[in-house]
Structure formats: C-alpha cells, structure tokens
Length: 122
Image (tube, rainbow, N blue to C red; front, top):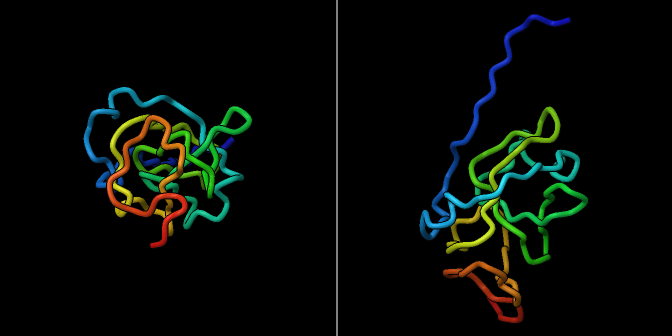
C-alpha cells in the first residue's frame, strides 16, 4: 500500500476551437480509451480532439466523422479517463489540435467554420 501523494490536474487547455460556449453546458460524460490514445504526446488528449464512440468508450475519430470533441485536456497516461464530450455546436476547424482535419460530408450536429470539407482540395 502506497501512501505517496499523487497530484492530478483537471480541465484546462486551449478551447479556441469552440465557436461558441453554447454546447459546453450540454456536454456528455464519456470515458477516453487510454489504449486507443497510446500515441498521444505525454499521454495527453488535448481539448478539441475529435472522437467517436466505440465499444462504450471514446477513441480518436481519425478519418471518420466525429461523434464529439473532447472538452479540456485529459491525461490517459495512467489509464482510461473520464471527460466531457461536446456532441453538438460550432467548431473552428483551424484551431483543432489535430493535423489535417477534414470536415466530414455528414456533419452531424456540428457547424464547422473554416477548414476543408470532404471531397474538396485544400
């Protein structure tokens, strides 16, 4: 049994990808699958990371249309973490923390500002 003190920081991060605060109050709680984010720098999933639901958890959306976007920075260095997931709202594409995000053809409940849409040239 370890009695060492562990400090964990919650929230924070760059939320400039949010076009408005509208969706923040309606964010749903979800579990980030640490194994799926193994390539995240320092185990940090940054605010604005596009995610999709898979197997009861959230994983990187990759080229798929996102189910939502992570609100706040979250560490998955020590395993799965609970996060707020924005599932609708206005997204500022150029401020997302991922390279080469393409606005999906099926935008779902999101409105995207800037960026390249599926099927368009950059």
